[in-house]
Image 1 (cartoon, rainbow, N blue to C red):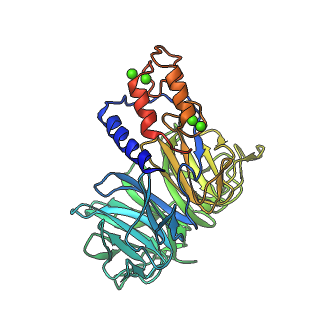
Image 2: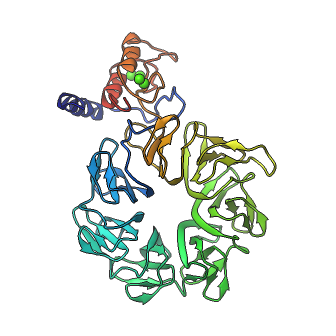
Image 3: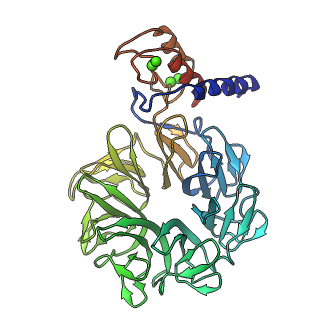
Length: 447
Ligand SMILES: [Ca+2]
Ligand SMILES: [Ca+2]
Ligand SMILES: [Ca+2]
Ligand SMILES: [Ca+2]
């Protein structure tokens, strides 16, 4: 982009910010994939994303194996603010598997976890914190890799729950999971063990008896209790969810399909509570059930998002096919699909390889799901390891960009009033300066 365009966009962006925009925008287009032209890609796998506000505004943070985000050198962790990528210092010396955040009372802090032993050039075993300028180790770290973070208050105060494949945190025994309160580490009972000793997913769910922490992964026991891949921590004890699953749980998320909030588990399993459930299952607090007929391979990540057709559970992973029921014909979805409570639907032609991370992020261009992982295309567009699925405000001709053709539509519709104004970008029943401001603020996105 030219300097002149930068200046123009900065001025117009300020103009737009000063206008009071209606809360709900018109969505004349179907949601679409924005490829690497809309969101510049990365040069290697993304394993996890999180939306976090460090005090300068919400942004999407991604961790993985990459060393370049767009044309910015960013070692295994990077920040996308909706317009540009930026690095977090010099990053890490090895893979970042997890990004998360926690406020210990001194303001929100970003955490990264993974295989690394250095962050920002400083020794940090498998976990580090970022204060906005500098990386620091976290209380002696862990003795093996970190896989997930979740902030939760179990009744004893807010803390960051850290999971992974470790057996120690801060030098203390802690099997697969530990609690960091901002100053000290503590174990969760005897932790989770067996198989790979790896805890890969964390979620908070209220089964009717109060919110509790749920952990999923490759483990069979919590102390002497048999749990099989998933367990519930109430702040003092672990409990099982029926007989658990017959493999590993990779992701957990609460979703209400209309019958009340339930906990959805995805991963590498084909049975939950003894019921056939291919790679995805639903726990309602008492029993497991299948989600339609499941999908054809592992589910790596969930997100809940309303893309205009109603809220749905978005699932990403290794699968190509989804089934509305056991025995229903397969639907080709390609690594990402939406479950609305009754049926699966594809997101265009999906992604050309594994989807490992999903985050809902309103980047200022419109509400969207950001998918990230191992792929190099989403929809029919090149998309290197990250792609955006959603609306593009100001995209009047529905081709996932805002350019001169959209501006042409708006100008030829100038002054229109009523329900059928093609230039009505903000959906308030006219085509006027407010619509022009939206187009100009987003001008150049995706083109
Ligand atoms: Ca357009
Ligand atoms: Ca166009
Ligand atoms: Ca309007
Ligand atoms: Ca108006």
